[in-house]
Length: 86
Image: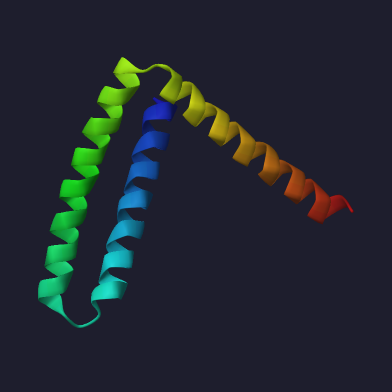
């Protein structure tokens, strides 16, 4: 249950970030804001489906993603350690 809440929170945060980015780029142009949000939703759904299908077909993509996340995590831990203790 905790994992589900974590995923929901991450999804909500990423969606909010996307909305704020589009709103900032659109400025006072409301038609551009609506277009950007609709385009964003379509692209996210299409990309998610495409990537999901690729991961099902080519298992190495999931491992490559995991490896990339691991590298970033190690770098963040190293940087925090360096800032805090050195």
